[in-house]
Structure formats: C-alpha cells, structure tokens
Image (tube, rainbow, N blue to C red; front, side, top):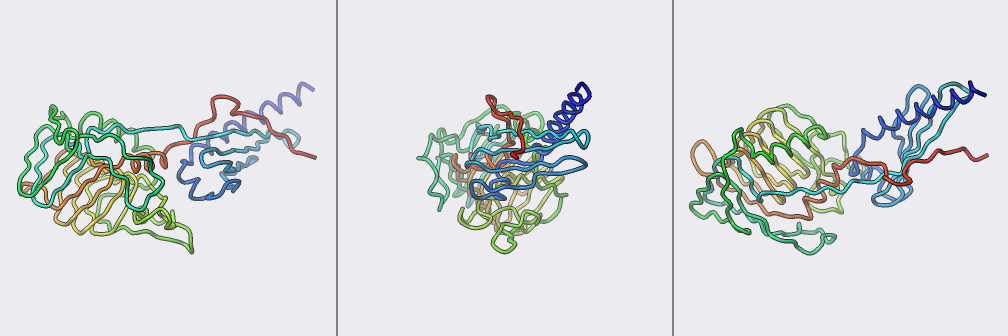
Length: 323
C-alpha cells in the first residue's frame, strides 16, 4: 500500500509538472482561434507517459486535462480551470515619445477614444488621453494633434523610450509569438482553407474586420533590429529593437513600440497607439502619419496575448476515468 501511494503521488506530481509546461505554451487569443466554439477541444501537448488536452468551456474559461504516469499501474489525471487574467494598458498618449516629436504635413494624432470601424462589439467611447506625450513637440504645416490635453510635455527619457514604455516593452517581449530579424517586411493576412494560417510569419492579422479568418488574430511581433515596412497590413503588438521606417503605405491596428526612431516616406495609419524614442526623420519633421487612439482595440490586443491563469478558487481537481 505504501508503494502504491508513493507511485500515485509521483504520478500526480508528473501531471502537475507537465500541465504547467503545457499551460506556458498558450495565450487566450491563440486558443480562441483554434477553438472557435464552446466545448471544442485541442491536444495541448504530449510526451513520454503524459498527455494534455484543452477544452473550451466559455468565451473566457478553459479546462486543461493532464494525464501523467509514474508506472504502468500509477496513472493520475488532474483538471485545471483556466481563464484570462484581466490586463490593461495605461498609455501616456496616443503617441508617446521619449525625446522630441517633430510633426509636419499630413500628420494627424488623436487621443480621443474611437472604436475601430466595423467592430460592433466595442463599448461606448471612454475618456480621451493626451494626443502626444513628449519631451519636446514641434507642430508644423498641416499637422493636427487632439486629445486631453492635445500635447503633454514631460522630461526627456535617459535611454530612448520613456521609462513606462521601456518597462512595457520588456514585459511584452518574452510573450512574442513571432520573432523576426531586422529587415524589410511586407505583411498580409494568410489562410489555409477558411482558417487563419498562424504559421506564416508574414501574417500579422487582418484589420479589415473581425468577421474575416484572421480578423481576431493579434500576434506580438518582435523584430530584433531595425526594420522597414514595405507595404501591407497588420494588427496586434509590434516591438522593434531598432528603428522603424515606413517605405510604402501601411496600416496597423494595435500598439507599436520602437526603441529607436520612427520615420516615414509613405503613409502610415495606426488605430491604437505608438511609442518611440524619437518621432521624426533625419531631414526634419515626420509626415504622412495618422494615429487614432482606441481603448477597445487596445483591450482586445492585450487580451489576445494574455497568458492563462488557474482560477484562484476551486481551480484544481483530480479527475477519474468513468467505468
């Protein structure tokens, strides 16, 4: 009896360990894409002597079933009830800049909360935030900045991004779903049949509407160097370790964090927010940029990348196979 109890305890520990490993692989958004309907299931991992299965219960609740064994006669099954941990992003402005922001012709930056076009699931608009938060702002030509207040001045950052933006970059970087080297990128939605193709590294989602196959895909993209966007669309969170150059018309829904300079030679449309160390170009003022803040969109983006957490109460249960 003592030997059987010891083997059962080792099996339970194995199931817990492998369940934690399976849990770390997934975010809420990826699971919702792979399991679009309640009670859909997904093989979440397997190995020598263990298997993990995820079941979707509701829009925000999942059941992780893990079986582990310590010997042929010692098999343990446990269940974890999981849900997304609510997260929020406090933004200094629709455009947050660690240093100067030089804004020229064709620039519109709005901190007024606006739901994205075609998304009827958004709540009523919330309070406005500053349009630009920077150490220094020079608005010239036809540039327009709105918000509450339109411009908020603050001390210059000591190292590129403002302190809060750098902390956010560091927190989001380990959760990146796409890791890319510096280079030129033209991105587009990609599908396999009627499903969004999550394996295509140039698929950064589809901002044209939530009803499309990739409309609910909000990846975290980290580029390990400087990058140029040479056309296309994307959504989610874009993290750039160097400079970001817009070389052809580009549209992005979500949050863009750039450790270096953001500059353009073609139109850039962002629904969400941007944060960068410097907003401008080597020749002077930034041009052809539109940024429209949307709290609803930011909440969707953050929720997609949120990890799953075990319910704090009644979240763990030993399972038994029915005869």
